[in-house]
Length: 393
Image (cartoon, rainbow, N blue to C red; front, side):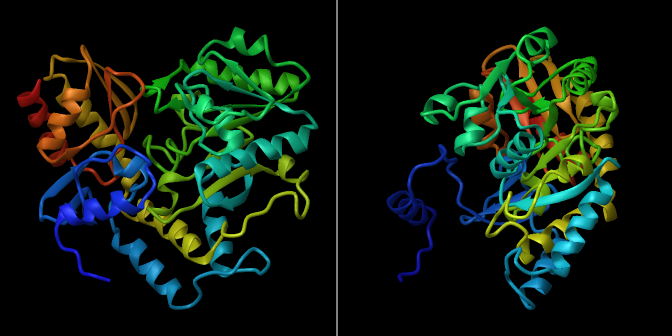
């Protein structure tokens, strides 16, 4: 195999052999440290997107790297057919930071798998088939999850859709009531709709959903694939003041859970867990030792470095600094899941920031620029963003 050195050669090789996925930035990422990505041409980028909210502890956090290295020298993988200390410790640690009623964990490989299994658990527990999700919600790209996604073109590209999915309007309880009959197994929502432009509802909406589910025997699922693992300044939006303290029956997780090692999870109440028997759920790679070591180390790193407190502090600083940018008409979201709403379209701003070596994200709302940085982002890096915005807008 010939050695390739230039960014152009790497780009050409990947374009030649890899099937199309996303529209790529003209960046060949070579290594990362904290909130910075270093390209193969030596340029440094401030990463305020985290590879789709994945790099929660920052790129290559030393505690996580050390844990992965130690585990890799012992056992890379064995399935759930055997017990594992790495899996046991990860499950214990994850449950320990969850709301008290969520006492069981199921590990898989991604957010879409977590959501599919959450819906399956709800259907098994209730004996019902339908699932209510919301306009603007995104739940993944596998068959059942993409059928639950009422955002843009996703259901169209996922056809033929899995039956049993009903759409309600986000923030509109009456639209939910109209659908929530005895056929409904679950109501699933992103408590902050990231891809829809970082949309939140009034906290009362989450409280009323909880009450409705309790009244009608429906399982409440929070898709916290993006909001979970500290991104909002709390471990989860579930149980936090921003969501009126509401606790769902299932929380789904992925993204930042393994600091970049693929892993997803469902946190489930003991009542729901009692309905699940051997072989009802399954996964070959879910709960593998490398991923489990990464989960435990990720949660420890967030605790050890006081990243939750950092998110709260730096978010406050960012909101204050953004008041200096008149073109930012609103700051949406919570913690480090933020949407900067501008008066006009953000595509030129997104491109101009990239030219200044700052990576951000867009959304389905053409006026909203998304920020999903590592939880270790500091005030100094916030100031770099604000000064760049001053020059751009």
